Length: 108
Image (cartoon, rainbow, N blue to C red; front, side):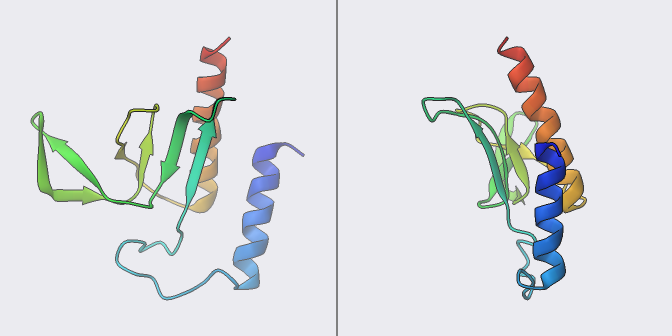
């Protein structure tokens, strides 16, 4: 079993047991709080998908205070985040591992 399949299976078991369900705050309308990261051997973040904090979105090259997103991805150590559209836990894992493959293939 590959890492993606094992992660999906573990997530499904946790969700099906009911132990991770709670009232959904407005920040997590899909009822999933997550933080997936890929780091190099020195601990520097290479990639991350999370909804742990707000990010400001850009509009015409300027940051605006009202357009915010919780679901987002970081495409490097200094990236403050770009919005990510959460569809499902399975799709999140698929998207994360697709980006992991791109990062790792780019390092070769």
